[in-house]
Picture 1 (spheres, rainbow, N blue to C red):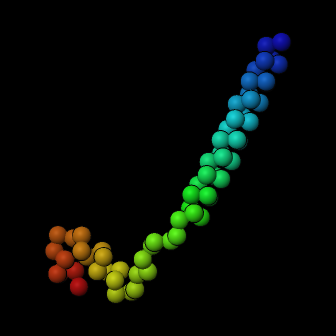
Picture 2 (cartoon, one colour):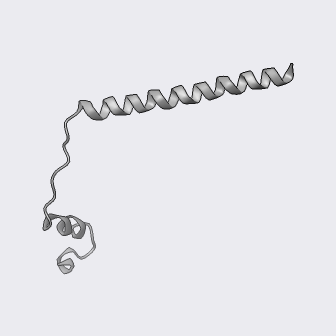
Length: 62
């Protein structure tokens, strides 16, 4: 009897974990597809500038 109870609880927990993973994946997918991409396109020259702008001496970075 104890073995059946442990098995039943394990199956319920496993199903709950699988459902949580599916619902979170669907939620993330819908969230990402609903808003347009606002990521700016970086040119090759803009990439070092963005990295150098946060250094202590940005003028010596080039």
